[in-house]
Image (cartoon, rainbow, N blue to C red; front, side, top):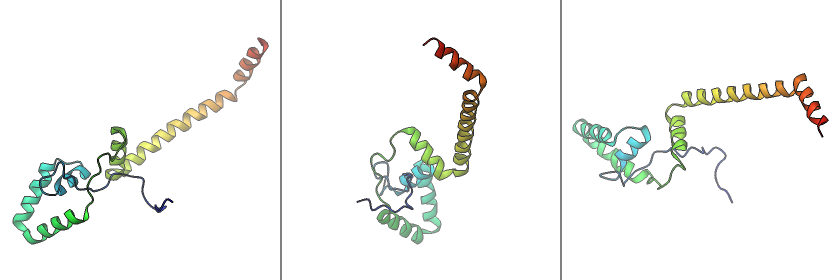
Length: 133
């Protein structure tokens, strides 16, 4: 029995911990992967945050280690799927515009096909082909 909610997103692009690429728990590596940054930049931001806000940053890091799930080995089936879902998560307006353009192109091609099939030239070519039978 499928227990998934109808409101669950099919988007596999989620915030995970990445212990394989991480130093301590994989939180910085997971955040970097989610937002498309280099892990070194996120680690640098964490160290700077430690200088100014040590207790809240340490608390947030510990909570993230406890709450964030570990990144599964194969989140995406292929690089194209990964690029698509990252785009949906990070730049949804661009993804929507791209899909809109693809549907417009498809609609235009279908319209051209319908116009050709409904034309008298198509009927004439079909009648000529049927004479050879």
